[in-house]
Image (spheres, rainbow, N blue to C red):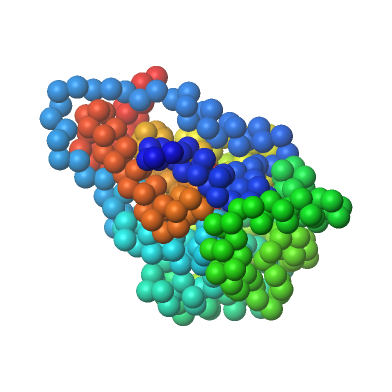
Length: 381
Ligand SMILES: Cc1cc2nc3c(=O)[nH]c(=O)nc-3n(C[C@H](O)[C@H](O)[C@H](O)COP(=O)(O)O)c2cc1C
């Protein structure tokens, strides 16, 4: 492909460059991938409302989220294991985000540690935390993130257990591979020479930077799954979140909300924002798409906190659709991971530039110049 033109082109480049198991880990969803597909299908089913001759010439895609100015209503959402897609991948992605004027959110299960990302001169960035049983450890992570200058904490609540992703099981990512299976995986890694030299050889150490003591190696999902099974706490309730407030002085964003009452509970505990999200179709298969649940969350809490969304956003047109339904901004998951796998920092920068250009053109064709003008009227019902 001489010139990638769309996010799906970066997906194809990522597929060529990555060993199968890692590509499938990014690309796949839980069980039958119904929710993964719904995220896309429901966005595709929305029509945009074309307006003409409205003089929309001076397009400004900038907006504010939680008091920060963003060059466009886009955030690089937390994506685990990014340092396996490109050498020291989280640092590369954070740099691209900073240059593009959008926030980068570092995952709990990143390869690069909070300190490594911060030392690369990318602060302030956002930090994502999972519900961890060991509260002492969680507090330590929060303290590290605050010391590194992180402004916003994204607390992910839709992964109290790890849902099965059939592709990861088949690829032996979660253990159980036969000798033949392990050899096939090894051969697949060896024949992806660019990745092998860039990441497996040049990108060391391949450990979970934030969990170094807890999880010894990041070379397969198996070690992480063992840790998740032991550490993630399905017993936690909204009432337990007081300790989070006590240990984090900045913004708290609750990620993984699809229900109006859950969104109200997030507002009640003092969250600054929620992310309407089904974890990119990677958790409850059969849950509705994020875009279809966005309006009910906006109705419930839109006047109390900022509503963000993610799941299936692949173009500037999709960004406009999410904004039209009340999202303040969207988070990207797979699109930036594809860009990173395809071309490292440059690939992430290109994906962000692509979305921005698509959004600008979409705004002109909708007849609006500023982000806050993208309202219900931007959809053709
Ligand atoms: C490979 C991969 C790893 C992810 N890791 C995390 C994570 O560590 N923490 C988290 O809160 N969400 C994680 N997510 C979910 C994303 O933050 C986001 O909710 C989802 O990918 C959005 O959907 P999209 O990929 O269609 O944009 C991950 C998603 C993918 C694809």
